[in-house]
Picture 1 (cartoon, one colour):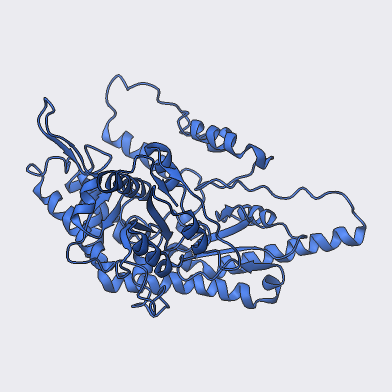
Picture 2: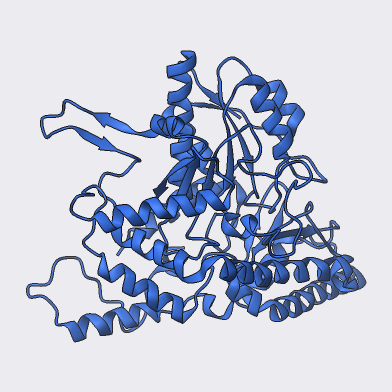
Length: 471
């Protein structure tokens, strides 16, 4: 693993201390260019699931200019950087509008989906403590909820997502609700399979019991918000929708750095009202350095990212997001339809659940063809797809670059399935009774690769994180 991540070649020189004299601009520019051009999975060619959601050169140039204009800006000083304060407020307002926020709706920007989810859990815990006196909070989704539960000492209840729908079980949620429950959670869609939970029914539960409901739209972002306007089915339209139109929905997390195409490190956490948002604030009125107030986890925050995000929203506009949704979801639907109808594919793999947006997950339909063998074979062809577990599966989160490569993705998958099927038949004909060593593509969020023993995944993940900080 360390060898795979280590930089090899002409720029493998390690910088372990400050240079005695600062480098000249030409050297820095050359070094940055070399680092940018290191051998990597070609997201530029659409061969990566998720990760880079737009990648257009014109948009990147505009974002770079916006970021440069506010590179020293810090929203902790709104009097010094009033333009950043204005842009941040407008980002929240625009995203709130896209998710049908009420007149009293509110929100904050954060560094990403994990922070948005963590702050939603914190606000729910503090709200329950203040209004209901709960000191042993419990919640009933993406791994960030586990992180929040660990940080804030919240008991986490897990519910199953049974086949064939792979939605969170509403009867299980009902059964697990108790006097200490401070938050219910639903996904729109979930990360593994791209499935939208039954938000109307979960909203009804939340309303019945007076418990907040958070809808995780981090991955769905503006794709799911614009499905209907793009001509695709939108989740639960007949039942009132999936967002603040449902009376039980009290908060929504939306990653603007995904399908809103903003620079990395930008997300928005929305609340039904301002009073709920206040529970996530940190206030220290009697600090010797002066009254201190912080809206989220960070103190200082990069105003440059706020500028880049604001500029992105204003540049693309509603028409641009609708057009992008049509391209991305159109590619996802083409991929799904091909798996369902192509005889080579549908005889060996099947779609998980009924995805509505940009994420399509599939798994082997028989015991002879291993799902992780497919993942390994696609990886060998230069595709960085995401391996899943419980059950073993593979998903592709379609993006604008991936949409352009959809035909290559389909043809390579057909060839891979054909080749693997032939190997199985050859083994049968030869009478080979040896135990097949199945592929073990790493089931580690954001990372592709192979490990020998799936029982060592935790140790592998820990070692991976350590390796990231090795020079």
